[in-house]
Each structure stands twice: as C-alpha cells, then as structure tokens.
Amino acid sequence: MKKILIWALCAVCSPAFALPLTAESRREARQINAFLKAVYAQRANDNASFALLQQALKLSPDSAYIKRLLVAQALAEGKPELAQPYADFVPADSTDPEDWTVYGAYQWKLGQVEEAEKAYEKALALAPENSQVLYQYASLLSSLGSMQAAAKLLELAEKYPALAADIYTAAGNIYGRSKQYQQALAYYDKALAVSPKEPAAMLGRAEVYEKTSQYFLMLHELEELEKIGYGSAATYSRMGSVFLLVKDLPKAETYFLKAKADDNGDIPTSYFLALIAEQKGDYARAAGYVRDAADYNENASKWVQVSFYLQRLNQPQESLKTLAQAYQKFPGNVEVAYFYGVALNDNAQYKKAARVLEQVLDTNPSYTEARMQYAYALDGLKKYKALEEQLEMLIGENPQNAAALNLYAYSLAERGVRLNEASGYAARALAVSPQDASFIDTMAWIYFKQNKPDLARDLFTSLDTETFSANAEIAYHYGAVLVALGQQTEAKKYLELARREIKAAEKLYKKIK
Image (cartoon, rainbow, N blue to C red; front, side, top):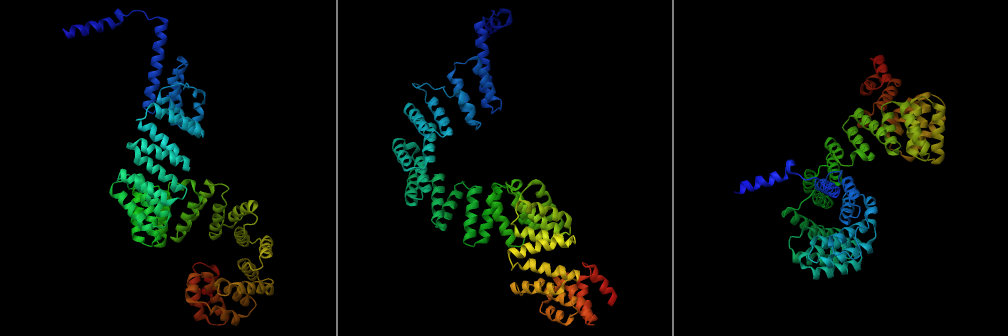
C-alpha cells in the first residue's frame, strides 16, 4: 500500500500534473535558490560566497539575516570594509544573540571597543550558556590588557564556571603583559586548579618563568606540555633557545630539530640551527637551514648570510652567484649591493664592482666601507686619478684609516712612483696596526722598489710560515726579494707557493730555475 501512495505523490509532482506558478511564487523560488546557493558556497569555503550573498540580498533587500551573513563573511575574509553597507542588520531591540555576536565582532575589528563590549554583553544576557559568545567576549577583554578588563574577566569566571580555566588564563595574560608577574602566576595557577592540564595556562606560566629568568622552571613547564601532546615548533624553539642560553648545545640542537620537524620554515628555529651549525664549522648545513626559513625569499640579509657560508665552503663562484641573484631580487638594498661589490672585487670583476659600488655611494655617500671597496675596484681598473681622489677623501675624513693608507702606499709602489710618499702612507698604516701582515708586506715591497732588499728581507722574516702559505702575493714578494739578494734556492720555496696564482711569480720561478 505504501508503494502505491508514494507513486501517487510522485505523479502529482511530475510535469504532467504541475500547476502553473504565479509570478509571486516564481520570485520566492528565485529568492530561495539564490539564498541556498550562497549558503552552500559559504559552507564549502567558496571564494564566490560573498558575491552570491550579495545576489541573494538583491532579491530580498529587506533581509536582516542575509545582511548578517554578509557581515560575518566579510569578517571571515579579513575584509571588514566590505561589511559597512550591511552593518545596519541588527535592530536596537533584537533578541537574537547571534546578531549581537556578529555585530560585536564587527565593531571590534573596526577598533570600536566600547561598542563591541556592549554588543557582547547583550549577546551574553540573551544566551548566558553560549560558550562561543563568552569565549569571544573574554578574548576581547583579554586583548584590551587593562586592569578594568581583568576585573570583568574575573566576574565572568565566577558567573560561568564551565569556562573558568580559559577566563583565568586570559586574566593571567593581561597581568603578564603589564609585567605584574606574581598576579599573572596566581591566575595561571587558578586556571590549572580548575583544569590541571590546561595548555594555555601552562604556556603562560612558562612565559612568566622565562621573563623572570627562571629558566629551569620554564623548561619543566614546557616539558610537561610536551608530555601531554602540546609540543609545537614555537615551544620546541623556545626550549632550544633556553638550552642554548645555559650552554647545553646538544639539548638545544635536539629541540631545534624537533621544532624544524614540526615546522620546517620556523624562522627562529632556522636561525638557531644555522648558528649551531656555523659554530661546528658545518657551513653546508648552516646554509641549508637559512634557506629553509619561511622568510628566506623576503629577507635580503639571509641571502648575504648564505653567500658567506658558501665562501667558507670555498665555493666563491656559488657565493657570487647567490649575491648576484639577491642583487636582482632586492633592488636598492644597500647591504646586498655592498657585499655583491666586495665579491665582484674578489673575483677581479672590477668594472662591474665599480658600477655597483658607485650606485651605493650615490645614495649613501658616508658609507666608508663601500667607498673603500670602490677604491679597490678603481685600482683594479688602473684608474689611478679617480683612485687617489677616493683615498684622499677617506684619509681626509679619518687620518687613521689604515686600509686606505695601505692601499695608497701599495698602489704607488706597484706603479713605482712617489715612493717616498708611499713609504709615509705605509708607515702611518703600520702605526695603526703594526702586526698586520699585509701592511708589513706593503712596506717591504716599497723597500724592494727603492732597491733596499735587506730592509725588505728584515720585515718579511717577522712573518710566520702560515702567512706565506695563505697569501700568494706575499710569498711572491718575499721570493722576489730573495732573488734580488742572490738567495735563489731559498727564493724557489716561496715562488713555488705563489706561481700557480701569480703570473709574475711563475715567470721569475722559471727564470731562476
């Protein structure tokens, strides 16, 4: 019998039995369809939901409910400005707590705190057991950070015991932000007395311990959080930083690696792991950690840091390539441009280095280090007049600029001109830094150019063996001095160190051989 009745109903609803719809009925059908389409889009987090709600409102322009949905959707999308035309959705005598909750959230987003408070209080009066309204109101009060807000929170805790733990935690946060740490701890303790495993209260207590330098208590709190499953990149990273502070490097690294596993791009974690790897001399891993940071593509300094690690890995071309990419990616960034200019100088690309450094000096004329690097580029380009102008400017600003004095002296010595003047500059540089091997080399080279090889040799003998092994130019100069003194056998040892890098050393080596 049931089957027959169902068949009969279907027959009545089928096109063959359909009655013609009135204009009013068709309008209502369009309204319902538009509304349902918008609601389904909202539930599916469809980007088109706001536009669909607007279409629904056009068909039902007096619908306060659709206006409320539009306001809520605008807030959900982080675009409160879109809600303004629909903000009149709630009448002053509304008895719907949802109206006042949405209106409160809207006013809060606009920064109208008093209006937001009034709206939430009306919502709570209408729905005193609605935990969502209470939570939003408590969040608003917590964000205010005032003692008046804290007092209101404590009243709410007495009135709504089911949410007391959350409310006491919010009060603790207010006291913590105002640096009243004892009161903050008291309210976190109250929250934990109500709910012994309340993670937000435990985290708040850990923060107070951190700010009051009670690091072992802080670590204990965070370890307890980890035990109950509330470990996160943020907490692991903070634990790692504390272990780093107390110089327990293995534990610090362990927790930073946990943080990285939880959030590979966590910025503090990447920084500290790179620092630890750098201390270990593991520059490849340090570079990898910096590249993994979430802000790497927006942070010019981190590209410079990676280039430094690549330089330490003896990969100058990769280091230069990284700086070249950063120079394109961060136009106008002075730090990147400066280090790019330095790297170009090191790579003997003096023309490009001069162009880059000149641009830096155009906008930063007082950048002494950039001017010094520009001078090195000009020396490499043999633009001696411009070089001397830059060096005189640097020495004029700081008569004890040893690097500028030394470059001036060495450039004159290499050209074999004004050697007495060169000797004066070199002596001034050595007076500032008497142990600097490159300054000693410059003075010795001037003596050599002045045909005083004995004096040159005396200076070179003050340098240790490692200096000659590490610096081909200094090794070549000493070799040339020894050849001039007729000590070919001894000279070969130093020329051998230099001949693969310096053509003049190779030529002299072959000559005496």
